Length: 143
Ligand SMILES: Nc1ncnc2c1ncn2[C@@H]1O[C@H](COS(=O)(=O)NC(=O)[C@@H](N)CO)[C@@H](O)[C@H]1O
Picture 1 (cartoon, rainbow, N blue to C red):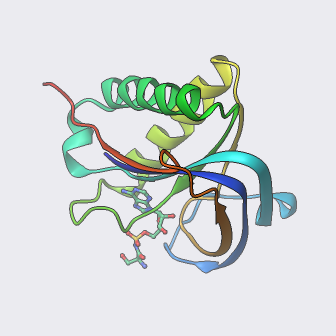
Picture 2 (picture 1 turned 135 degrees about the horizontal axis):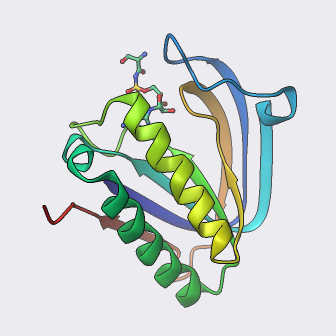
């Protein structure tokens, strides 16, 4: 899994068209979303992650918690992003991994939003620009 973490004043998105034949079903209210004072985490789930998705979820949560505590962010935006890797996992595996990460971060006490999976989306982001505001992490299953 590849992650790009951007500490932001806000991230907002608006769903445009479907990018997959069967995108994640979403409600009307999920077509737009915004969080202020947020750690935006753009994530590409990779083929290699399919060997042990549960382990990748746990490692991703540890990494995200670590960065969130460094930048003192208590809101996280989980953002599916297919452009950080050329070896993408299948959509059904990727969606499950991202849903699980969202769930685990909420269990850890964060306020969490996840942008809809399988859609082209317009988004605006305001990066804070401090030294830790732009970070990337790569996670691989140990198996
Ligand atoms: N492995 C993945 N990791 C993260 N997001 C993914 C992944 N696979 C699909 N998605 C989601 O599905 C959307 C489309 O994925 S895609 O790989 O770009 N596929 C396409 O664009 C297809 N139209 C042609 O393959 C992405 O914007 C993202 O929302």
